[in-house]
Image (cartoon, rainbow, N blue to C red; front, side):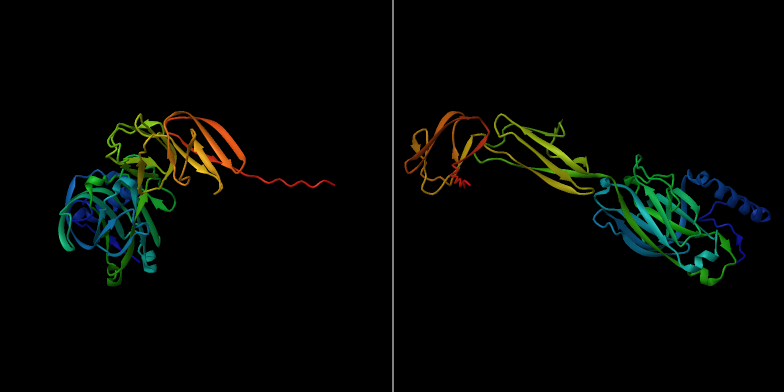
Length: 351
């Protein structure tokens, strides 16, 4: 279908000049724009009027995204959820109707940040900084990845376009806008709507939130926490970590030392519980019911409960009928000892 380019004061810069040069100028603009799409990305704050079809929020808790419809010459405002630190970008997936394939070059898309005002649906006058601007590809499925951090690692491919502009979290909400740049098209085209889905693009990070529990008799004694051999200086702040396995170490002169591994999930905050324990050594006995157990010649009357002892040398004696087993233990601070009396039965058959 034939169409010609027109000047739109609120969406496409007038490179062509006045009416006498409008056709030539607009054609020149389209050629330059298609060959060098980045040439217009550094514009100053612009003022424009648009119809806002929807206001949506992108958050890691909703990985499937939020779907809305956007019409021609209309816009969508996009906000960030509270956990934007886990995002490296936003994916915009636009699904076009079959009729769109007939109107190649008829639409451009623009993305703005530093939007003012930051809310409003319907027809509204806005100002904003344009960070992306290009002709809408003549495909039925169009995907943009919008970076929101400098080291985003996003790449343009045959199916994904990455604008050169970056929308830092502090510049949200951003606006995605479709504008018509051809006239003489049927009313059917102007009533066309596109489906837009906005999804989070997660970084490979999660976070841990420290939860500290003290024994009643030993509160607020000093201790040191290390994650992957790095000292954590402030346990009141969450710590960002790469997804995967990490190593926790707790060191203290007043509590039991601890060493364990934990898993960090992408885009999630987990509670890392530090259960500080009394460093007094503990002995746990396991023996048959008819066994008598002596610790340093003192009978243990309740053998099911752990027994606390002081560090040093101790003697343990088991008696089952006439059978007696005695062992000497060197007990160390902050350790737990499990002592079990094993009664074994061996059967041997000779040929």
